[in-house]
Length: 80
Image 1 (cartoon, rainbow, N blue to C red):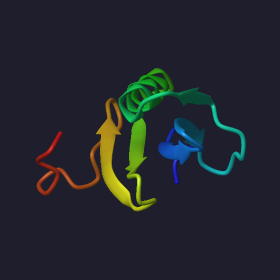
Image 2 (cartoon, rainbow, N blue to C red):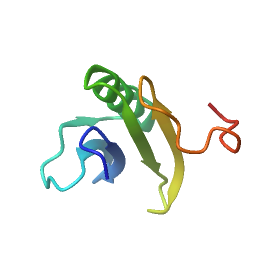
Image 3 (cartoon, rainbow, N blue to C red):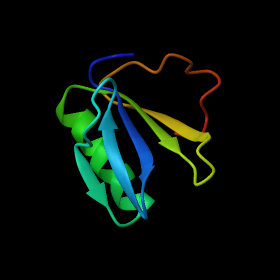
Image 4 (tube, rainbow, N blue to C red):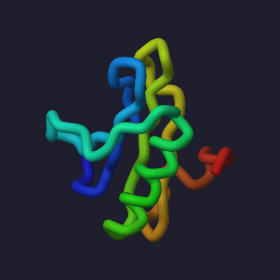
């Protein structure tokens, strides 16, 4: 896990942006989309990394590499 990675997770009725290994969320948002946007902004400002997004069922549904970090699987990652 890189130090710049962020996770978008369910937080009660809201969505939180968390940094790996830290219990307290960086920010809490009313929608998953707003939390995802905030997480990508934080990772971009920190120099790039990975954003992982959790679905309502608590399973990881998506991940995205945010520049300037290199995508670990460029040939397979065609969504972003």
